[in-house]
Image 1 (cartoon, rainbow over the protein chains, first blue to last red):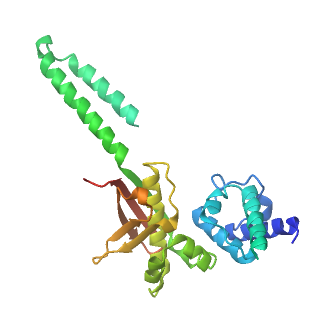
Image 2 (cartoon, chains in turn blue, yellow):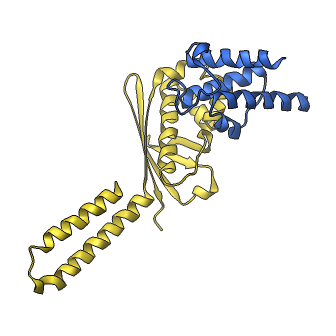
Image 3 (spheres, rainbow over the protein chains, first blue to last red):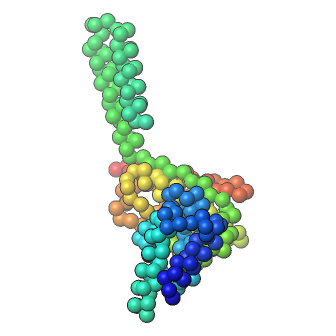
Length: 86
Length: 167
């Protein structure tokens, strides 16, 4: 899967879970300053990412997902790790 | 806030000092010493007691994105899930425990920079329905956490206190 396609799927999942349009989200969108991005939605978002990409995101990475840019980087890392392990 | 209290205390002592004769200084210095000790004691207590509060909407625990096993397993322990999912309506029970965990995280976070994750905190009821908090990290064995949970038709509320256990 291309990086652009992965980014697009992550954006769609994020937009769906948080109930905001994709146009409201950028790489700088941050957990501590985006009103809709609260702790429970963060966990729901992580769970949906895991199910959609068939990956496991460990607790340290869940906590490290502080911006949308970091979310994308961590999901790609998990996909790579999953592919190597398979 | 603590600094403001101490400044307020010093100001009160200075004002009061003007009301006493010079021969009363010995008595007053003991009084001031007592106040200083009281202030130190209050500061110690403030340093050892953590407080956390949280409120959640029950409806959020009816959302299918939240009810995914991958999400529930990140938040709750096996025993918490066994308890909550055994109820006819699990949403209020899940919401109360989640809110309780948020309150506990805030209470402990106000004592140290330690950031607990949800499934490191277990909240189960004792025989008379009082929520009992268990922390899985060894370094928190010295802490005692008290938690109170409450709910209305659509919201749950949690209040947590964390303090060092009495010797």
